[in-house]
Length: 355
Image 1 (cartoon, rainbow, N blue to C red):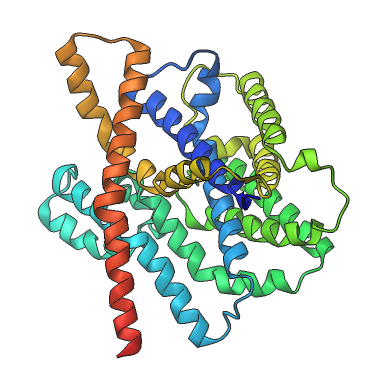
Image 2: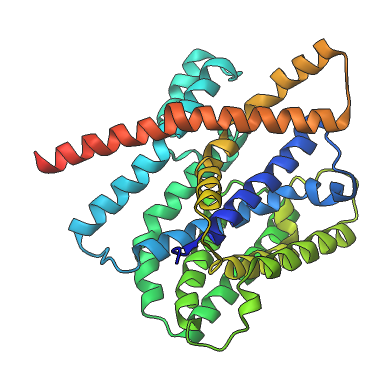
């Protein structure tokens, strides 16, 4: 009998990456996704899904560790750093060298902020320090810094306490964007807005352990349930968002999207597969989603040049060509920078530990 492996969270990551791509394709390349146009225009909502997923996964892989101990805490932080920084630094460098509009001295002045990964702590400079999307990694670094504290809180909570935490964080995430909108602020790249999403993911992961003994219909933890939830989300967004234009701050619609994302994450948390080939493909695609997100800023101009040479402006050609380009570049970034960079840093860290 073939061994079953969990693949649901990998599927969630792949779907989230693709939906965010549709948002960027609509915003930056004027792609039209037909009956899914309104949903694509709101595709940035799945950035919240990434933060929920990050919290969920990190708790499921570290819940047995005692991160109060320095001996456990140091390798935890180093592992997070090693996993994030190679592609982050590479993309930041490419942006600074070829896309930045500031002077060399201005970029040198800002570079410590960028290479330390703290750019999202300066919301007033978001237009300068965006770097094609590296704000996401910056926010994640802040989340990871706080994770040990969050883990110890969640471990001591009852099931009721965890539900209360999720409700409180959800209320904050629904109300806060409305207040910010009134004050003409954007929370999209704000780490202090993304941290509650990350905290919900941690708490959800812990909550699934509590629900393991509960009599919940098996259908809820299945791909079919996820498909139904995804269709319902698309329908709700399509019927609710009364606009033909790109929604630049989808956080205003958290009252709709956040509950769906939470339920979808739970539904996929126990999805398994026995087919080795399917498992390999899904896990590989999941592993390149980080790079897939980072390269999206850089593909539109080259693809536009190709279309101009072809003398064509076909909508579906734009979608197909841009998606293929994004996928190919993300695989190259993963294979040439992320994977070897991470492997090299891990070796260095091991040598340091044994020295």
